[in-house]
Image (tube, rainbow, N blue to C red; front, side, top):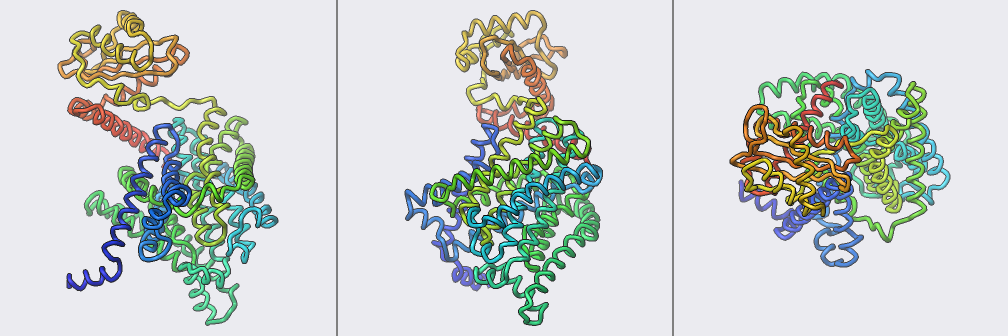
Length: 614
């Protein structure tokens, strides 16, 4: 039996093809991760770096300057191309499953009228703009070959593309602004949830309305399923209209069934799985089983698999038995493995130079941003929000992020749009995502909380300071701060010691935070020292300080010092974090430990906020 299996495997993919397949996945994942981390370091969405990896590896750069390498690594046809297409489809399916997990129907229900108004008006206005423009000027917008044969589905798609929103981006922005638990934050999240639900149902209708003949001609598997279902229902007749309505009916029945009976069954099953199966393996197997089964069901009906995965996520995610730690494991697994592969794949076949159409990019960006902004603002005003809160709601709802890009990619694969329009949608989605957070900050006059990890690199950490007293430790840390800032070390030392003489900065549990505000400091500077023997900073519990953070902040930013002091104390208040900090050997390991501790703290905070909303 093993020999037979090996023979069958060899007849499918040769060793050289398997090698190419694994190498292309490794290169995509590795470069997407590296560039995503670069973007994260500059507080940009990681999806920008992940798409940039595809641009580097795709036709834009690698295909232009090293065409033979590009053709070997990413062949346009054959078994390797089919394998990659399968991975991309799976990645998109699991991405939408994670988005569905974020949808909390009870939160939407509690917001009631306000969420409905923001969603309805926020959809109607940009949808109308996109629909009318697509119906009147399809060639200008970049209609695809199947879109030419189906002007109505193309126009509906453009309306949806202009009005969709990105729940994950909005949730992250609100958490960064410490607004996720506020009334405004809950309204924006609820509206985004409802918006996503309406948008993906609308896209399912678009796929169902595509002409069957055009779909089959394209060689798309989903299209063949649509035709098969129509033939089965119509008894071989050419009455395509009945087949379309049958597909829509089955889709609606699936959605209603999953959000009622399916939701109840998932709720009952999750608690039993978590009680009797291994954690997290058992529950992961269960939720992915449901997601893939639902994805297969909608693909069989004749719409894309992503709708089934999205609805499965909504049904499972609405169960309060699904623990937040489990949600985080699912999120980390999908967003760090499958998401980079999907977004990198977008840039492989697109040429962002040759197919860049500036008038089209500007048109799509203006319609999507202005329509969503004005529509959501109007809906928020009708719901009774203030002028400032209404504008903040509008800016938050403009973010399209990964959701808009996924929608565009699926439309490109379906032949609804061409590459020019796809590039315009990608640029629009990234631009609106980047501007949402800063725009909300400016409107609300709020500021993102500065974290300790944001200020540190390897040069900001001293693993073995030689100091034996508080003054010596401050002097040693001041010298490193002088190298980093260009300010005289003695001036830094003097300012910190003046503050230290007023009140000692030792904290319980072996921590100390000597600090000062400097007039000529352009931005905050933190230097962390670790002393195994400990230094006496006259702490309340009498324990010598082993982790010492020198905090220097500009005089013009009084709140920054408070934020850094608070974050340092909260991060190292946990015993296991202090133990790990003292056990690591290098500055890189220290930063890795701190990064993990910060992420864990954020997860706990997010869990508390989520429990407050559920």
